[in-house]
Image (cartoon, rainbow, N blue to C red; front, top):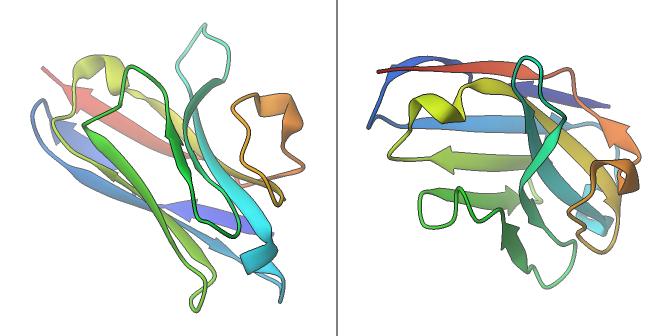
Length: 121
């Protein structure tokens, strides 16, 4: 089970940190991803971190502004979002899949409920 939180309203140029807490004993064996979905759009890849290395991957639109990290001791994955833009406005979802990180939403097995991020101009 995944629970995402940390969304909110922020001005353009501001920062937010999203967290996703996972239940279970095998968190460290799962790759974790963040996706987002704006109204009328498909769910889009944002960032992912693999289980073991841990290697990180980013969408081109957020590279250099967002950072994904994980704390296996706390069963939590984070998404630090800096220099936010109005186009970052979306519901953000965390997701999990075994071992290797992927960038396609259909390759993830478990999903959190989503947290809304609104960036005002």
